Length: 184
Image (cartoon, rainbow, N blue to C red; front, side, top):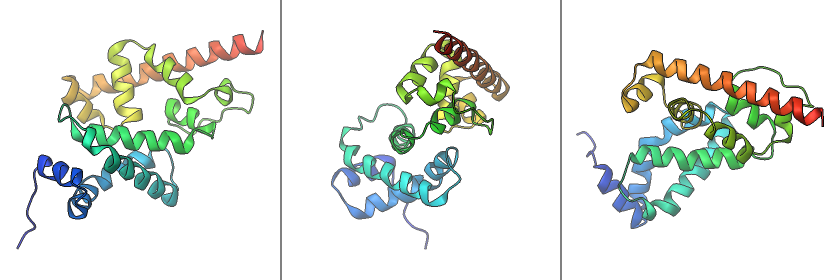
């Protein structure tokens, strides 16, 4: 006999009541997606598990604040991302990862080593609105280009273009900052 499918509202209300059964249902429902999000920032399974579990702890602590406006999964992703951010805040490599999401080496004198997450997010917020939104959905919240396309009403190719444009603009901004930083 298949397990009963619970509505999102039933799960959330059960978690608000601190019902362990519904907390487990929610955890199982979103665990794989949140692990995938964490693996975008670390390949270390133990780190990813710690981050995910801290993220779900935040979800359970704040679930009574969810207002049923917007995507619940997006709200969960946001809280898990905050756990990722907290975990890597002390490591300068985090800045490099969130912007470039590649294995480019950044020298020890890079401006990225001098920046905080808030500084980097200020740069992200200076991007054109559509490019910023795609970058945030892809690089921060872990959406795929297909999911972004559906959410924003654009093709996945357009989403990929915006992501490439965001990376290009962010690299230029960082080079400019680095040049001015080391020539002062």
